[in-house]
Structures are given as structure tokens and as C-alpha cells.
Image (cartoon, rainbow, N blue to C red; front, side, top):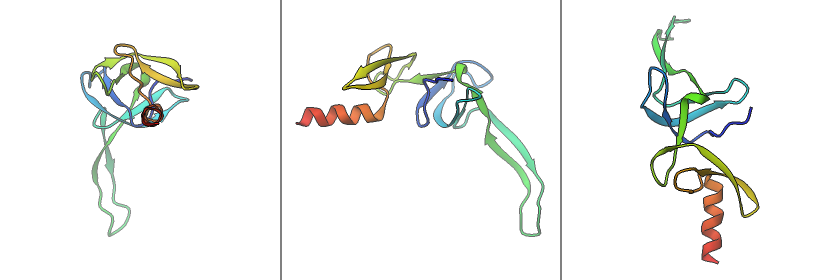
Length: 117
């Protein structure tokens, strides 16, 4: 499955119990079409101590959210946007639909280095 969301992206949750929250993508599962976002879809896991030194308790972790329920937040215009794909310097990069800025860090670095030369 081809996804427009990558690890490290800042995203806005647009559907579900955590709608309106923003966070960084921690993990992407392409096969399932799910992403884990920091501080979104918090789930409680009850852990039993397995040894004398091990502590049990309730552990809170992020659960997976369907990729269709998140939108990438553009670092330039700070708005949630759909993602377009275009060719920049011979490389296929992700582009903001609202302002046209590139979302990929690698493309930004090459664009800055070409300006200096």
C-alpha cells in the first residue's frame, strides 16, 4: 500500500475519539495501513510482575490509527493538507497542496545546497 505519511511527520487526527489532536508519527505499518502517533489513541495495558524485581502496573502506550484518519501538517504554512507528488531535481517528493512547499527533508537540503552554489 502506498502511503503519503512517513515516520517523523507532524500529523493532525481528523476522525475518531482523538480528532483535532496533533502529534509526530512514531511508526508506520504499510501492510495494515496504520500509523502510531505520539499521544494519540492511548491504550492501557495491565502488566503483571514476572519476577521479584519486576514492577507490574498499568502501562499506557500509543495504539495504531488508520492512515485515512490523519492528515499531514505542512511545516511551512502550518495547515493540515493533502499531499501531492512532484518531481524536484530529478527526485519524486511530497508537496503541500495548499502552499506548494516540499514536505520531504531531503529535498529541502538539496534545494538549499543548490542555492548556495
